[in-house]
Image (cartoon, rainbow, N blue to C red; front, side, top):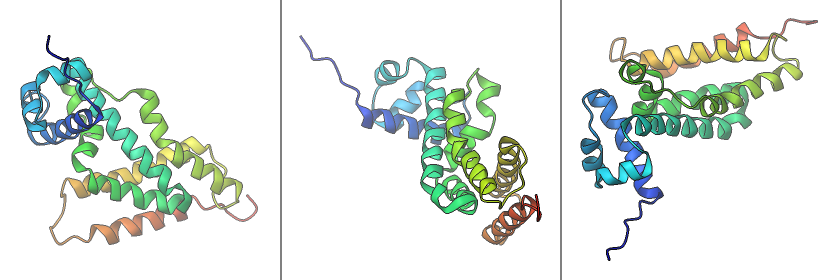
Length: 195
């Protein structure tokens, strides 16, 4: 009797990375499980065994992206809001396929595929916590911390998305633009004296 094939964490990680790359390059409708398996050097059986099917694989890839992003944000949290903002861009530039998979919207148009709500929310907690910490220190206005965090997120996300979409002259100094935006965002939420 043949031994059952064990599909380990290494195979799972490879499949998730390959899925993000292929979907980013080809679009979700054109990518098949056979394509993913071949690019990962495994079989479709591994995909079915580890994930279930294409929709589950795509959801797992999105969740993987949010977990990786959340890990980078937790690591940067000790640097405060500025550190989180810089880590946001650095992670996106290092994981462009995952970033576009997470935020590009291509999956929602193809299948009912969105991140697991708890996983996505967990990845944003370091930002909310940094806002609360800055508010308690008197450095930020005492607005609703979630509102402040979402406003900050929207601004940095927009710039990073423009940079990844190459929405300007190739010589554009995105790093300088991003730093100027982080400075502007910080000044916009500074607590006024006596508040």
